[in-house]
Length: 205
Image (cartoon, rainbow, N blue to C red; front, top):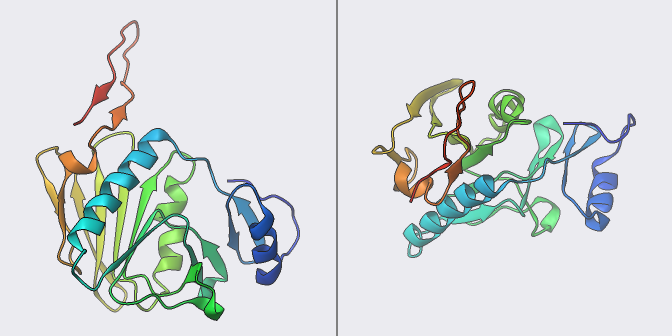
């Protein structure tokens, strides 16, 4: 990720610029950072998950938001756009702005090559400063692999990995389960090629 300019922007300046921008950017402690463009796989995975979540929570008091809703993390002076957020109750808006929330319980990120390190480390560290945050999913878009972090106590998190097509992910903090087959439905993985060999693209679904 590249910083647009080496100067300090206030949160208010960022929001004003973001309103007029043609593309989304994150704000991290005074710096404005353009977000990487999404891929077809990224979009398909986020859509598959959000669709299943929305259906499962139709008659329950949970809310699901996709990447157009901004998250404010006050302790890290950060604005970001998680791929999917689940709220256990009604959204709490920052400064009465209906496009900025502050109370996600679960955050899901679909990993890209350019941001996967950031999502696993600095961004996860920032998310952990949110008092309502209890669970984090990192979904690989290049292969079947999901890391699930769930909070077990103060400064304590448990990790579970999923990497087989016949497995199902059960969220720990809300009543929801999805199979990896459904999560990766219609996702096409690029083949891993050996020297002098080529393979067909693999598709699930």
